[in-house]
Amino acid sequence: MTAFRMTGGCQCGAVRYRLHEPPVNPHICHCRMCQKAFGAFFAPLFHVPTASFEVTRGELAIFKSSDIAERGFCRNCGTPLTMQDDNDTDICVSIGSLDEPAKVVPKYQYGVEGRLPYFAALAGLRESKTTEEDMPEKAAAIARSNHQHPDHDTETWPPAA
Ligand SMILES: [Zn+2]
Ligand SMILES: [Zn+2]
Image 1 (cartoon, helix red, strand yellow):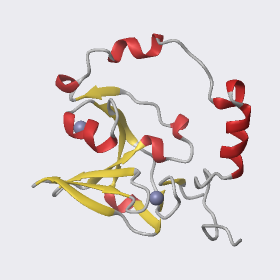
Image 2 (image 1 turned 90 degrees about the vertical axis):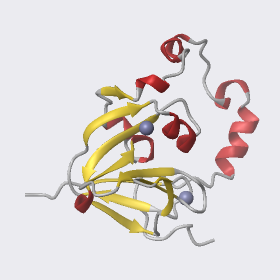
Image 3 (image 1 turned 120 degrees about the vertical axis):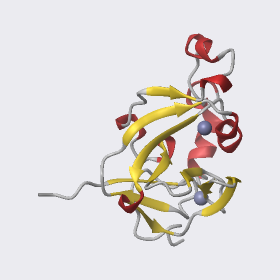
């Protein structure tokens, strides 16, 4: 029997984590605290038993967003990574920080009193791809100087020059 393994981390690679059990209750949270913490319209999160969440590189920086909850993020690059209520045996982890976020599909919406009025219209917005198509020179410059950690565990990071 092979142990369950799913990995993720922050944008800069200073914090990496591993799940030892599959994500449960994947959802998006529209509450105002999650909007602020993620700098986004909502927070994509899943639960996992705290004992099955292992930080494998670096450590979480913590902001107590209320007296009963704390949010973990990367001190170096600011990526939101976790949210945990005091005394909860589960920890919430951000879906977008997973190495393979497409594998965890949100199943419900939470905190809908904070849902932004234009949320339902987002999927219908005019579409374009990133700079590869309309700004190839900028895309090449980004690719040459990319400081984002790759979507898999690494032996050392940043790589030796
Ligand atoms: Zn980071
Ligand atoms: Zn929330």
